Structure formats: structure tokens, C-alpha cells
Image (cartoon, rainbow, N blue to C red; front, side):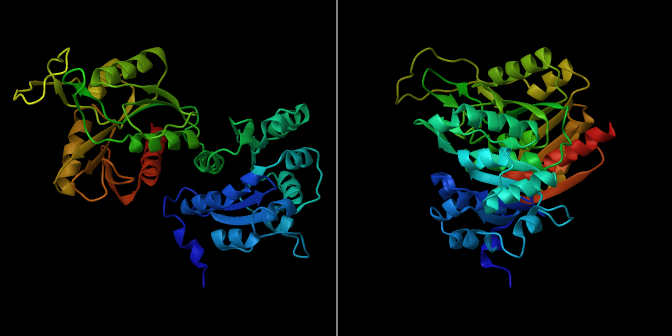
Amino acid sequence: MEHTSKLIKSSFSRILEGKQIALCVTGSVAAVESVALARNLMRHGAEIHCVMSRSAQQIVHPYLLEWATGNQVVTELTGQIEHVTLAGKHPDHVDLVLIAPSTANTIGKIANGIDDTAVTTLASSALGAKIPMLIVPAMHESMYDHPAVLKNLDYLREIGVEIVAPRIEEAKAKISSVDTITEAVFKALTPNDLEGLSFVVTAGPTRGWIDRVRFISNPSTGKMGLEIAKEIVSRGGQVHLIIGPTSAPVPDWIKTTRVETSQDMLEAVLDRLKENHVDVLVSAAAILDYIPAEKEDRKRPSGETYSLKLMPTEKVIERAREANKDLFIVGFKVESGISDEELIARARAKIEADICDVVVANDESREGVAFGTDTNEVVIVSEDNAEKVPLSTKRHVAQEILERIASMLQKK
């Protein structure tokens, strides 16, 4: 019977499905984050095998990581030659060695070929077998700034090891967040099928101001566009995110322009198209179709009845098409209370009008779809195809969208 802890696998996405990861934990207090990291990677489909140094076992008990992963934890090397089983030169080795957290001591040993713990011996085997490796440092800032540590990190980068930089806070080089490490794993294990391509992604709502303190808007959180931007980076593409007002956290490793109004969004997109070579525009933002015709330069007194005149906004994708006839444009279309057949027909009209190459359509009236959710259900419509993505996380939907885009661009 499969360990019950594995029931969470692929509950977020299938990005790492079929991937085997050796998660190596060393003696930093940041080892307490290893459980959350392992579980997060499992939720994206990975199988996790933990390897612990003796010092790590004094911070986190191996039973906890066994519970977290559903797999026995390697705490010492035995006659089973665990380092070779996991990371030797054979077809069944792991796909990635992830050392998180890594102490300065472990970094130095790996850089200098010293094998005196289960972690460092496995790392040496992995380097010899040319298995991808990610190292996530965590220590006091003074240790991280030691010339020898910096030299060791530089050397590891030179031989192909990826370093996930720490967060410098409170005089400490703190371990990167679980989400940041997860994104680095995605990048290491997903195909670079978007390498060399430049994207602009729009996300979030826009605002139409009524007076100095009131505006009209919509419930968009920007999460769908954010997940698309993250997926582009993980697949080797370059992305610039243009996002409206939202509280959703935007990673600092994504180039971002923040905007507020529909006009701001339009100008930011056209500026990017004018100033930089862009291959693909993904217009995932919920840009207002109508805004107040005038903005009062005061706060209108409460208690009055008054009428508000609205005027239509310019369509960003239409202006983008005018500016660049060869631009590959992915539009998003939200409808409400219609059948899949009608949803596809309305999406295809944008393609037949030569405005979009692909339209991602959904129906906000369905539970868990569109605004204010972590899930979505869409139909990806192209000129000769319409493929439904059932209700799933927005990251999984982003993966499906980018796979279709990559496939279509390869055929062009």
C-alpha cells in the first residue's frame, strides 16, 4: 500500500510528475523549512527522497521527513550504497539533487570534493554522474560574506551547479522562500522550449476613477497572469509582466511594470512593443471595457443621487495588433452563463477577425473559475482546435497554455 502522505502528489500541478528529487538537508536551523519544501514539490508531482547530515538530524528528526515524503530517509551510508542508488551513473538515478538548506561547511566540502557525510558523498556522486544540482545556502550573513564561501559558490556555478540566492535579512543569509526554491526546481526540470523568446504578459484589474477617492474596477487578482509569467521563466523564456492593482505577491525575479488605469495598461504594452523585440503578448489582464467619462477633481459628497456616464476603453490587443502584425497574441475572454460551444464560438470570432492567434476562454459563473480563485477552467481556442482544461490550479492551467503556445510557435 502506498504511504498516505503521498496522496497530496500533483494536487497543485503535474509540472514535476515523474520526476525524482533527492532533497538533501544539512545542519542549518533553516532545516525546519524542509518539510514544507518537500510537501510543496510533491504537490507539483515530484517523488522526494530525503538525505540528511548528522547535524541536520539534531534539528529535524528523520521520522518527520519520512512522514512528509512517504519514503525512508537516508541518514547514513550503508551496504545499500545509497549515494550510488540515488545519484550514480545508471538509468534510475534521481533527476535532481536539491541541497536545501546548505551550510557554509557543506558548500566548502562539495566544492573541494570532500565526502564525509551522506549529503556530501551523494553530491560528489551526482556531480560525477552529471545530475543537475541546486544548492540553497542558509547561514549568518557574516559567514556568507566570507571570501572562501563566495569563492566556493563561484566555483560551483562554474561547474554547472545552480545556486538559489538567500534572502539577506536581519544580518542573516536566510534560506529562499519555498515558492522561490520551487520555481528554481521547475526551471531545472522543465524543457527550455521557450528559450530565446520574449513575452509581455498583462495581469490583474484596472481602475476607472469616478472622483478623487472612488473608482470602478473588477474582482481580478492577477493570479492567472502571474502564474503564466512564472511558467514562462521556468521554460527558459524572457518575460515582462505588466500588472494592475493587486495584493498578490509578485516575485522580484520577474521584470514588472505596475499600472493602474486602462490607459496606463495600454501605454505600457505599446511602449514595450516599441522599445523591445517581443515575440508573444499574453493579454491575461481584466482590463475595464468601460470607464467614467469624467473624473471629478473632488470627493463627491455622500447621500446624493447622481448618474455616471461611462465610455468605452481602447482594446489593448487590437492596438497591439496594429502596432505589430507579426506579434503572436494570446487573448483572454471571460463570459458568463453560456455553453462550452458558445464559449468556443465567441473566442474563435477574435481569431477569425485576425486579432488573436489563440484565445483562452472561461465562464465566470462556474464554481472555482476566473476571478478571486486559485483555480480555473478554460478552453484554449486556436484556428483549428479547441481544447478544454478541466478545473485545476491556475499554475496547471498556465502550463497547459504555454505548452500549446510552444507547440504552435515551433510550427510557424
